[in-house]
Image (tube, rainbow, N blue to C red):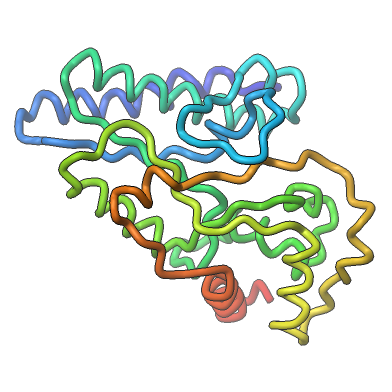
Amino acid sequence: MLFVPLLGPIQSGALGILKACLKSKTVKRVVYTSSASTVMFNGQDVEVVDESFWTDVDIIRENLSPFMRSYMISKTLTERAALEFGTQHGLDVVTVIPSLVVGPFICPKFPGSVRLSLALVLGNQSEYSLLLNASMVHVDDLARAHIFLLEYPDAKGRYNCSSDTISLEKLSEFLGGKYPEFPIPSPESLGEIKGMKWPGVSSKKLLDTGFEFNCGVEEMFDGAIQCCKERGYL
């Protein structure tokens, strides 16, 4: 099942907000949160993707599971619609494209991005293949990027937001050394994991504005693991 009926309401919701902003005549800029899923699945064999890449919806329909493709398609089509609306109506729309968001959380449920990032800690073997080449960003840096781009006078179009890219083996090495209390699989045991190796996400355009990331992989996982312990997930 593709959950196609969801696409209409999702796009309508985003466009409804943009229409309200336009009608107010006081909103100068809208910063929209997109997803790296809108740039990564494009059918091109590249090591790194920038904002010029767009996910190919037809390829997604043919290759991904119903859940993943419904999410990627909705995010891709909604971001396109938001940018097109801005162009057509003279509204300044800037989109932020985060990679895997990791760090502490305040929401009542376990965030999917944090759960995925902790697959090696949680022992979720079915998700190991999704971390073969994982681009990540700390939630605090992502929040700062939104504020920065709202205020940066020359902001225009799309901006990737990702501070680090790490392989599954390197992630295992880091987690095993930093958190010995967890039974992290060894890098050697993960060598045979098969799956799609996602391209890295380039944040050059964002960094060229003068924005700087404050947090790295260590801060991401320290915050995520501490939060999980406090909420009983670990």
